Image (tube, rainbow, N blue to C red; front, side):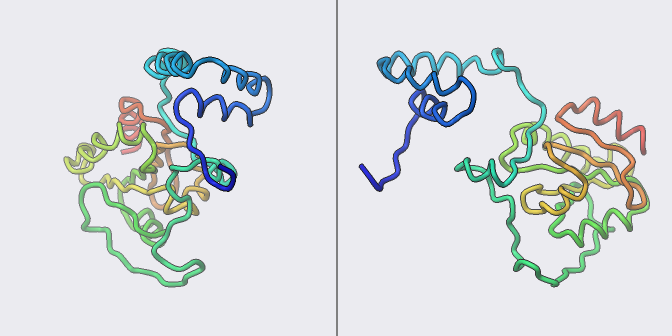
Length: 205
């Protein structure tokens, strides 16, 4: 009805979305004339084999503001417990913190990478990022077991909640790992390839 929001699922949702894309995609909108059970059957086949057809990515691109407005279920890109333009700082000593330490503010992040004497592995993630979910358990295990020695500190940064930090270090895809020493970046790894990440960390330990 006019004035009310409508929700479309499976093939109907996809084809109605095609109508608003550029190029030749809008031509597929005409497939709506087919019976829904046939369209949905084709949708289910493609969905079940999507990794075989399109491949599987090892990283996710952080959506910009324009893209975010088109998506219903992406976590807020700007989400802070502090008021905007707040000058409030929360001093936190992360020196004695073990395991995978969650950075709660930009000040906490800056203090950690500048004061730690050894290597700092900064893990940028997002709650909606599937590759991040796949790699997180391994990163947590590494941090808790001190696999790379007790002078290597692991920290994690929610790219949605700490957008300024992600922008400052040009983090545009997730998961992404920045290696810091004495406050400066000495290495970078993008994606969920654990073997390559481990080699990169060992190179800078």
